Image 1 (cartoon, rainbow, N blue to C red):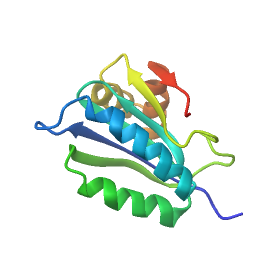
Image 2 (tube, one colour):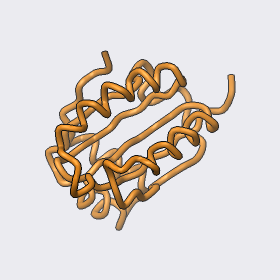
Image 3 (spheres, one colour):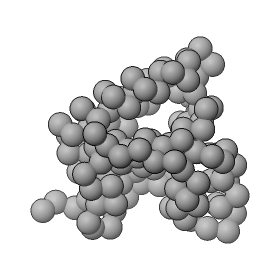
Length: 134
């Protein structure tokens, strides 16, 4: 089995994008990620995104290139990238989706002062209403 790679980033919804576009993003991501053996979660608070992806390094890298070119979000900031613990954190979730009850960037920033980006992600996850992958 090849090494598992993960990437976590945050971004902002583009000013000309509607928050309703997220439904389409999740629907298409579930199909594409299942095809590419990528799992993860997309968290949205109405203005900001946090996405955690895990899979093969080449597949996650190719997905990140597509995400960087996507005009529906701006200010993409990679918070962490590297080897991921086995087994997968979101095994069976080609793209889980969660609504944050707290502001994403504030939660990550506050946690980041005393912790790693992944610990900030953990704090964020505790405030998320998650929906399983279909």
